[in-house]
Image 1 (tube, rainbow, N blue to C red):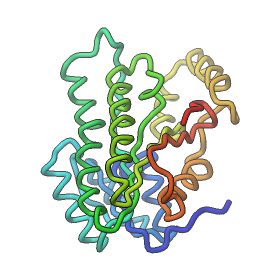
Image 2 (image 1 turned 45 degrees about the vertical axis):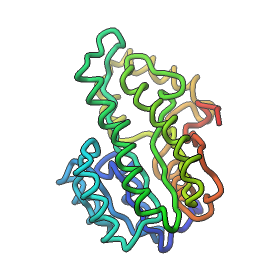
Image 3 (image 1 turned 90 degrees about the horizontal axis):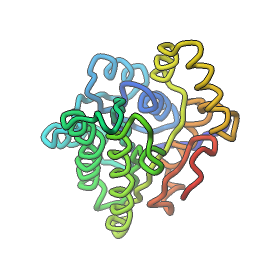
Image 4 (image 1 turned 90 degrees about the vertical axis):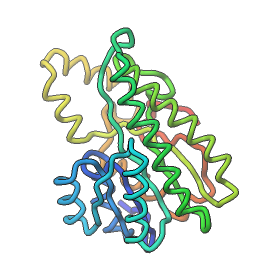
Length: 254
């Protein structure tokens, strides 16, 4: 499978210690990108970055002080910045009626405030020469998601904020897009392992109806990485303000 080259692209990836962020940290250096991975989980983040030929810096995306310090160090390490892929986030479950203030605050602090802080930090490095910001949104932020009220609200904020940035920062040559992925990850393996056989069968049946292409979540290597490589490349520079659904056709919206 042909994948877009990223030769010379200077890239920060948040959430690089697991899941889809980890997949990008592993893939992008092999495509020619120079990568710094940011995550709160230091042990696995450091190991993954070292294995991939990237650099790791610890960060708490809900803390302005932590984000600013991490981005300053990352930009210095990279010698500038061309791309931010902001994948860091959390998705705890809770019915709307039982969602407490602490849970709501924690989820929005990581997912929504984290997007504000990382995007502002990236802006300071991108505003003179332009570049790309790719924020992780979710179908939940557009259609809602049962049992994940706070998560859905936080991702709705990411969509609205990102589209606002796309309009405001276009004059600096900065594109801002959003990813809405439905991809099979080790975290999803864990979720499946915790289901009873009956729940798993019902879950798979629901996916077969919801995902037109193949009826299952996408593969991180063949379905996810090539799309992300394109949107991190110079070739995607005339695309902004869009929700890019890497989900087999589940979310058919602009």
